Length: 125
Image 1 (cartoon, rainbow, N blue to C red):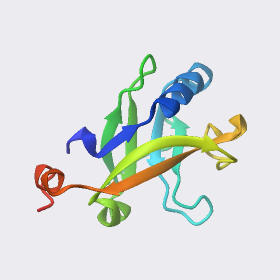
Image 2: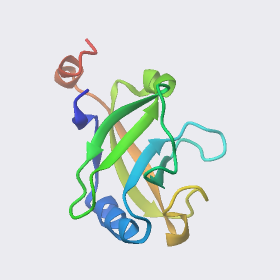
Image 3: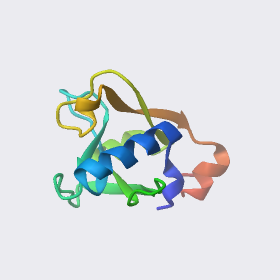
């Protein structure tokens, strides 16, 4: 699957670089749970175990940090497959499970429907 299904803003890249200095290499899993809403959860690599029930949407190049994989459950992907996702960061309290929570900010997803050309490129039409 092409990795251009997910992007990251410069502000989120800056936060990832800072968090990686604290926690080491990181990864995202797009949450679909009730407790944390539908937030991109950021974990140290190895703290969240993916399986055949998850799909790798892409790998984010984040400046000086190690590339960051972005995962989502296969069942949730069925609802989101027609969207392009962008990881951003805003002020506010994130989930206690995501590494940015103590920083006074939280990651969030900005989404848009993909264009006709993007849908064809991703084999969705």
